[in-house]
Image 1 (cartoon, rainbow, N blue to C red):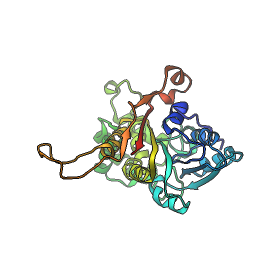
Image 2 (image 1 turned 120 degrees about the vertical axis):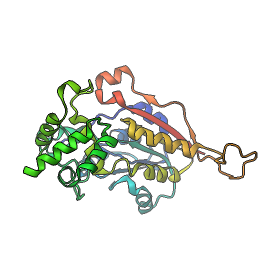
Image 3 (image 1 turned 180 degrees about the horizontal axis):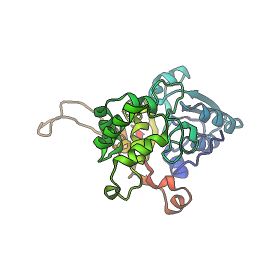
Image 4 (image 1 turned 60 degrees about the vertical axis):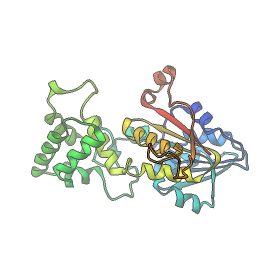
Length: 310
C-alpha cells in the first residue's frame, strides 16, 4: 500500500515545537512521516527523532521516507499509550518536544479492506493495529444493544443511537453483520430520511464511534498526554492536533490541569496545597488557513494546541 498522507498545519506544527537542531523529538503518531520528515530536516546529526505508530504500513512508509535523514532516527511499532516504556526502551530520559496528530490517517480511510470507510464496501475491521484482537466486526456483533447505544451516543454524538442499536440487534438475529456495506444498510433503515441533519449520512458518526471504541482512542489519550508532559525537559514543547470535539475536549482539559497553579478550594484564604503549574499554554488553538483547507479538506476541522514545560 502506498501510504500517502498530507499532514495538516505543517509549518504551524514545526513552529509550535520550536525545534533545536540537537534536540530529541517524539512523533507519537508517525503516519507516513509527514510531520516527522519536516522535523528530521531541521535536526543535526546530534539530534534524534523517535517515531511511534501502531500501523505496520505507516512504519514501512516512514522507514523509506526517513532513510536519508541526517539525524538519528528510531521507529517503534507500538501504541502511544506505552510512551513511557517506549522512551525508556530507547534510552531517553527527557525530550525537547512531543507531537500528537490524533485521529485516522488518509491511507487508512482510503484503503477499502481496512474497513474504516462507510463509503466503500469491505469486511468490518477498523483496527489501526492489525495485531489487536477486537475489530469492528466483534463490536457490532457481540456488544449488547445498550453498549452500542452508549458508544454511538458518546463517541459519535448520534441522536438516533438507541434506534440504530436496536436495528443492529434485530439484523444480527438473522445473520452476523460482516461488512461495512451491510452495516451502512442497517443504519440507513434505522434513521428516517426526513430526520437527518445536514452533516451527511448518519453512518459517518456511527463509524467514527465504532473506530474510537475499537482502538480505544479516547480512553488512552489522557494517560498518553500525561506521559508526554512528564517526558519533557524544561522549555520542551507539547503540540497536539485534534480533529473533533471529543478528543479536543480531553486535550484542553488535560493541558489546563497541568497549567493550573493553586488547587485549594476557592475560599481558602492562604494557599496550603503547594501545587505549582508544570506547563505554560502558548497562545490560542491554531486552525488551518483557508488556502490549506482548500488544498486539503481534512484540515478544516484540525485544531493545534501548544504548551511549554516549565
